[in-house]
Amino acid sequence: MIQQKDNSQLPAIGLILGCVIFGLGSLIVAHVEVGGYAMAFWRLAISGIVFTILAAVFRQKMPNGNDYYNNPNPNPNPNPNPNPNPNHDIANSRVNNNKALIFALLSGAFLGLDLALWHESIYAVGPGISTLLNSLQIFFLAALGFLIFQERQTIVQLISLVIALMGVVFIASPEFANNNHAAYGFVTGIVSASMLAASMTFIRLTHQASPTPIFLLMQRISIGGSLAMLIPMFLFDKGQILPTSLSDLGWIIVYGTVMQCLAWGLIAYSIPKLSLALTGLLLLSEPVAALFIDYFWLDKSINSLQWTGAGLTMFAIYLGSLKPKPLTQTAKLRRYRFFSRFYRRK
View 1: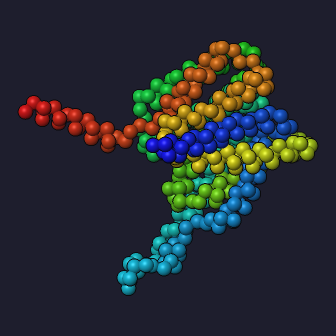
View 2: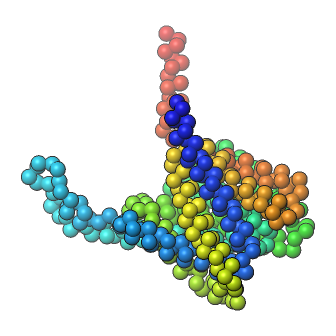
């Protein structure tokens, strides 16, 4: 029992650290004199270099149909290849690998848009509120899961959406009264959440097409995102594309390596090792960290109504992250309870 507890504590600590590092990244965005789209480009370009090196060091590559036929077969069966047409499997493997490549690049493109719009929201309403709005991606994920993967939604998840909307209204009402850029900040923050959900959906489609090693996947996502940011960067960030000092250059490198590579690595390592309920709860440490940084470090005015709205929104995000039990399991339980009544009467 003690060993099991220690094993669960390490991923929990890793997840919290990853989320807090993400929250600290908003400080870099707020202070570096680089445009939002350019900042997204540099973050993904730098992380792409890091993941390319890691993929080469660990020799990660896509599975190939040739691998199956080239591997020694320990089975003494004289006919180790039951498939009369191995070229068919090789062709299918190549098609699936190409699909996985396209999906990973599209995931990167949406991640680039997510980062750029999140940066724009930070400039308009501050790191705390923008990160909280970006965390609403859980509801867009639920909608995409229903539309694409036919995942059912529970009453709790629908209620959590209503609570989240109430929380956003509580946060927005004072902000609109005191901030001329509030509308732009809220729109970009919420749209960034939808872009992040789309990016995660394409990651899932990537693995469905062909299982992709993690460093290779992140390399392709980084390439797709940085390429997608080239045109918006030159259109919207003229004069704010390159860092103007060595200090800004150093912070951009930190932003691309620590926030994109280390934080993602900690989160990716920790999530599969924790229960979904605990994961949803701990993921809330990111917007909490960003809100406290915004309030205590950047001296942003956040009144009691907005704190209440933030609490409601985070509670809703936690409820929305809870995964429902499989429908077949629920149906079996109901069937058992129904028939058990007749056995009791005998």
